[in-house]
Image (cartoon, rainbow, N blue to C red; front, side):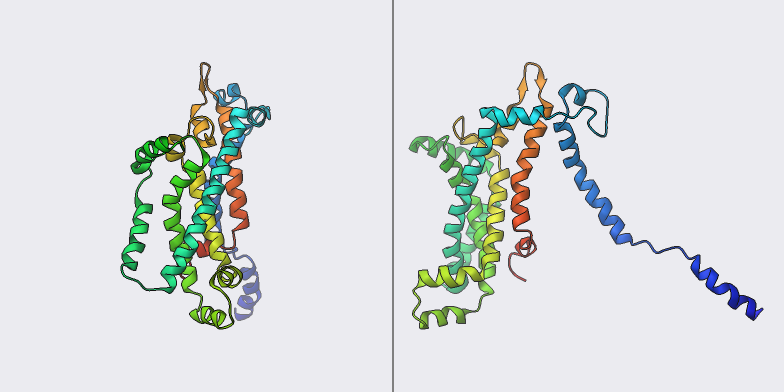
Length: 284
């Protein structure tokens, strides 16, 4: 009997079922679930309105690029992207230009009320944009900035500067103070030291702060719609007025949505190595 058991033991081991990596399966299902809306948006952008409102299908039966052609040839559509990119870039540059020296001051110096001022900056980020929509509208209308790119860019700095200061302050705090002192002993002026030595040390933090400023300004709708009318109207505002006498233009709206995702996806691609640090706000 012992010999028989030893003979069949290897065969029993070969019949064992392979172990399933449950973590990988769950992660794959979760990613597929997240990609469903994006896939459905792309699918609808390649369909006509009749096909979208017709029978339910998992893929386009007669794919067409007519919806994208409308957006890329109609100035009322593609200028929305130009306007959005213009004020988003202005806002990102302004936010970083203000946040960099402010974050350096919070990370290197101690002064009366510094912690209270730092907390006050964060309270501006906590307030919803709807609170400031009417004051900004009245102020910019009075000074002649209404319906301009700089109006939206300045309005968004109210929310982006505190966030950028918080992120950059965490990165700057991780840089030893001895580097500052050594640079001063070597004869560097503060602007030269800050630009040539200090900023390269926190390049990842600057990239993360720029990413968050870009994303908030790109997706924000309420202020950008309130402070613009025609000349600086962003694509997010244009997408809300696609209703015509024939109904909602689903195909063009979905094509606009796909093109709206592309700039954000490109920014994420270029700063993908620093996003994890950004979520930790540099305190890792």
